[in-house]
Image 1: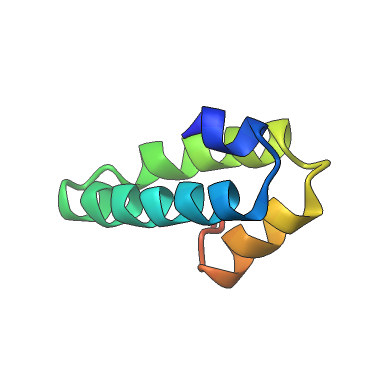
Image 2: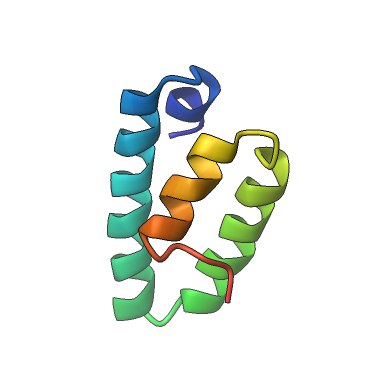
Length: 65
């Protein structure tokens, strides 16, 4: 997933977001939502200079809240 983000192309961002949505669903199912939120926060911090990625995360509801 990080490799898709590092490429800085919209299609790869979309793939990364879809993967994160699936991981989020699994985290909720397995009662690991807190761990997922922490990792998502770190991912957002590392890539805060990529507004297109951050917008996609927000639009997908992938916030650290």
